[in-house]
Image 1: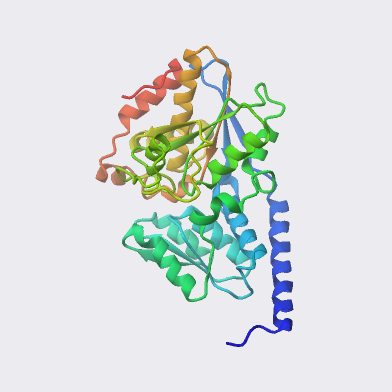
Image 2 (image 1 turned 135 degrees about the horizontal axis):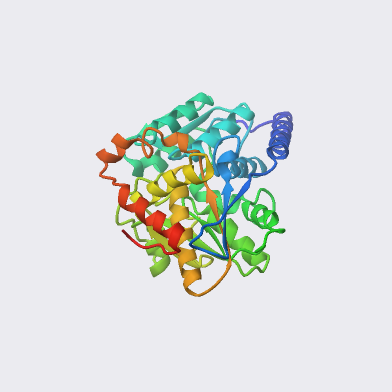
Length: 364
């Protein structure tokens, strides 16, 4: 096969420079997401902050990751002009990647489990992306590699998430949080809480906290039986999830390459019904609907606050609102769907009410 000529290489380099410029302009236009503040009667002296990542143009925390993955592919020479792009995703990352593909005039395919929320599939398609739906969720990575073997650039969120983002600054959610807290009562939070999908967000936050020499600790909120929790406890990266979860985006069935256990201080496992009940409560508290992983994070915040209160500690806890709840209107926010999956919210709603009023999280 004849190698590219120098002229072709120069033409592609010009396209890469243009693409990088478009991403830089988009980042400047995006500014930052809000850090929302709440207090609860049951937890005096403890401030709760919610980083509203759903406010991104593509609707989720994964907007930052998608931008980083495109930058990583471009700067490493993996993405060329007119090349197709592919990634395996259950939804939110795919939506953000499709959004950036449209910005860069690239063809994008999302390899998704067939069980992905219909609204997420529609969102990818509305952005011009294609959805390759796979019945066996365990085969999405293999299918993405098949696309890559045919010439597509594999963005590979699960393989590259923890290295694609510059955890010391650029596009860094941790830097944003700490900067926004600088004038608050407790500018150095006691805890930051996030979930673990690719592991990229927890890796970025944990590394940044150490880089800045902050006393803040990192907690991962995990669906009950998820692989991250068991591997974190045992140090065994070969473990698999002991149960499936209804919470999309987190609760991985196996330990992903980006999961860094050494920088996580605590892991809380959360029942799916508790996560969903908490997502419903967040809509009441904040006036907007957020996805199930935001509810998982909120439950972990209440558990941490309960421990702090028992020790007589004050301080702040920060967590993430990961994506727009409208994407789950046909699933997590649909009464018939919940009933079909055996989810009963009433006991968990009572537990949540007790927690925010009495300062104690306990199982119903």
